[in-house]
Amino acid sequence: MGVVLEIGNKVYTAEDVAGLLAEYQMLPKLAQEIIIDQAIAEVDCSEEEQTSAYNQFCQQNQISSEEQMATWLAKQGLNKKQLEKIITKKLKIDRYKEENWGNKVESYFLQRKAQLDRVVYSLIRIDRAELAQELYFRIQEGESTFRELAMEYSKGTEAQTGGLIGPIEMNAPHPKIAQVLSTSKPGQLIPPTRVGEWIVIIRLENFLSAKLDPPTRQRMLDEMFRQWLNSEIEQKVSFSSLQSPVQLT
Image 1 (cartoon, rainbow, N blue to C red):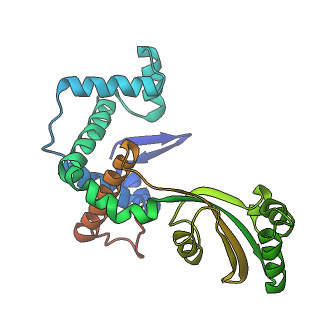
Image 2: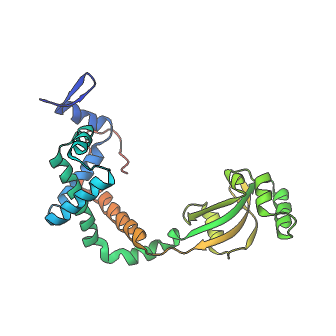
Image 3: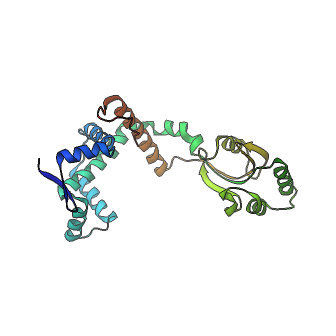
């Protein structure tokens, strides 16, 4: 077999590369791309759309001359025709997503909204219930600020920000903390609550309701596409030469 790859003073044949794909657990990625290619085979893109996508790629990568393009292609191990195919593939994938899930975005967003809503909250975590109760009353009575006590007593990294966390999505905090936040009002100070090994004092600072804006809409399309793709891989692909299950990303 002919040489297909050269790194340093070592050359690799097609057979070598096939073995390395398995060894480095890159076969799932290869299978994923093949499934995508099969799915988008009938998706049409006009020549104008492809030219626009190519120009946008050049702009994003600050390529403004044939010399710069040649240098970029050499570094990537590609030729221009292969690059154009990659760019067109992305264009087709975007269209495939829209054609298959564009009319489902709103309902999917509503299913996900509770996890996409964001919060800003303050947190003090300590390991002594008596101290937690004392700090809670000091904040409640205005004797000390939440920020002062968090910086002095909190055991986590939030001490560096005066206890302030966020904005983060509601699926990010510990489930018990998320549950407390979901039933709180901005400014509400929550009494000491046990969460795992810690006693926490929480105050919801702000609640930011998720909206189906263009970036969120694209995220929902991407999520539904990935779910479909993972399902296709699970149903259609078998890695018989691999000794252990492969985790797909």
